[in-house]
Amino acid sequence: MKPLNAHELRRLARRRLPRLAFDYLEGGAEDETTLRANRQAFERVTLCPRALNDVSTRRQEVQVLGETWMSPMGIAPVGLAGLFWPQGDIAAARAAAAAGVPYVLSTASSSTLEAVARAGGNPWFQLYVIERGMADALVDRAHAAGYRHLVLTTDVPVSGRRERDLRNGFSLPMRWRAATVWDVASHPRWLAQVGRHGAPQLANLASTAAGDAQAQAALLQRRMDASFCWEDLRRLRRRWPHALWVKGILHADDARRACQEGVDGVIVSNHGGRQLDGAMASLDALAAVVDAAGGRPVLLDGGVRRGIDVVKALALGARGVLMGRLPMYGLAAAGEAGVAAALGLVREDIDRVLALLGCPGVSHLGPQWLAAGLRPVPSCTASPG
Ligand SMILES: Cc1cc2nc3c(=O)[nH]c(=O)nc-3n(C[C@H](O)[C@H](O)[C@H](O)COP(=O)(O)O)c2cc1C
Image (cartoon, rainbow, N blue to C red):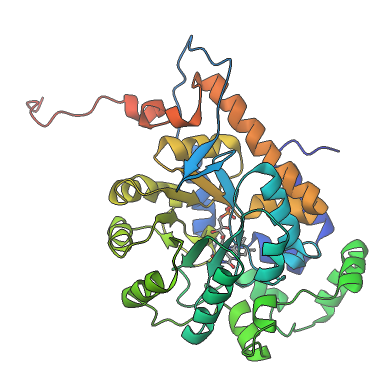
């Protein structure tokens, strides 16, 4: 059965994965308020289509830092993708390369960054700083392996409290409980794959001298170097010679400061609602960050589930979006083919939405397509009436 949308892909993923793996993918922090807010923000934005424009051809390629993406979307970094499918990072990277869109590999990947680079495409590398020496070593390895984009995640000074994971005992080493054993045993297809390929590891650390169990546990629990600050960003800028992005920015002043420190682009994100519960929706932060970034590309993630969401983000000034859960639903449902299906759904959506909107290409998107932009702007010279 070909899934019609993200809901159906999600259902397939939920059926195949044990609960502990599905909850890890799906969950947000604490009461999951920010997780929901990301979707609600998209639902609040409405568009105003234009009539009788020639939309017989519609273009969705975008230029980002001199590179062409075939669609204005990419795959966000997702740790432990091997939990969803054996060698899940490689499968997802291949699907993204085939679709002509970027794939951002997590520090917490289950294949090494070298193996993912060898699999082809033009993957990006996301950096978590657990310890500065370890981070420097990862940056140098990414450079040596041919990565050309580095994404520094800034919103994890400590790990958010994901209560689903705490309830399921999801940790390294796993805390097995009777319910977890039963959960895993009742998903034989998933269990057979794990049996054949081995339990997923945090491979980037396992292959370094620092790759001890403690470092792996710190990464899984996102126990980071909470003292990492602007001076360290400056140092990172000096160390990394290619494109540098900061991810996890919501405040315009932080975007401005990051640009002053020499980053090439900004990713507006609240980590898919997995960190600060109560943080604003990423879409609500977008316009001000775009303004502050002064022409540098701004990407958005958090809550993107359909092409219409991509179009709304672009109308609000994003150059493109990243997606975390949606391609991972595809990965969990059917491996590389499932990720390709997820990307294909969004691509088809964007094409249809452009036609229905009367917009010949994504480069034409801007605030003029937003219904909110049609509201008369109150004049400050008008006399009170
Ligand atoms: C299971 C899971 C693991 C994640 N792991 C990472 C990670 O290792 N590094 C990172 O910067 N962001 C990570 N994120 C956050 C995503 O990169 C992205 O910000 C978020 O998923 C976007 O929201 P969406 O899932 O609604 O698309 C993870 C998200 C999920 C769902």
